[in-house]
Length: 222
Image 1 (cartoon, one colour):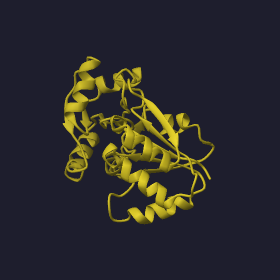
Image 2 (cartoon, rainbow, N blue to C red):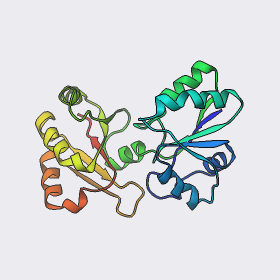
Image 3 (tube, rainbow, N blue to C red):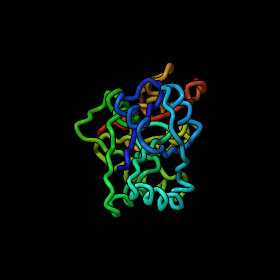
Image 4 (cartoon, rainbow, N blue to C red):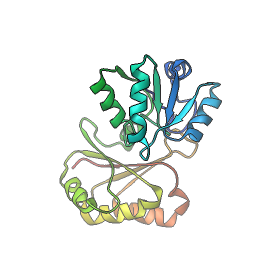
């Protein structure tokens, strides 16, 4: 069986007891970054083999993992933070498992998506998850589609591109549409900043120390 195991997005204690049990009992663990996952395992006294599995080697590694699973092994997959497959590697391996008749189980656990929507204070009966915008090609097209989306929209963004994102939001979104920038979920400096694109641009320009860490952006429903 392949286990997709969510890992903490901030506080290392935000992990379930079942997740720790699985990480201890599988034959080995696939990790997006073995150094990052190694710190988590050490923190929880989990001793197991880590193997690298990321966007640059997943095509090459998947066949070997499928062979191991087909032979009766159990494997866990973790990303650096959150649930594997949500803007992180997993899709190719999960699809290959289904094609090979191998059982896949995704444990419930941490993801930045839901806490950010809840903390934004925007309506969440329905929302659209956009993930990361393309860096260049296709970015304008995505913005044009988002601008027409009447539901709450959730995006991930790098702190290095936050100001660019807010300038584009001011360009494409309807005037007055509220935005929530949710930072460092579950960490010491967790914060939520709400305002229009113009207001947030001014705030973050005047407070560059706040443009750091893991960021989730939530756009208000129209």
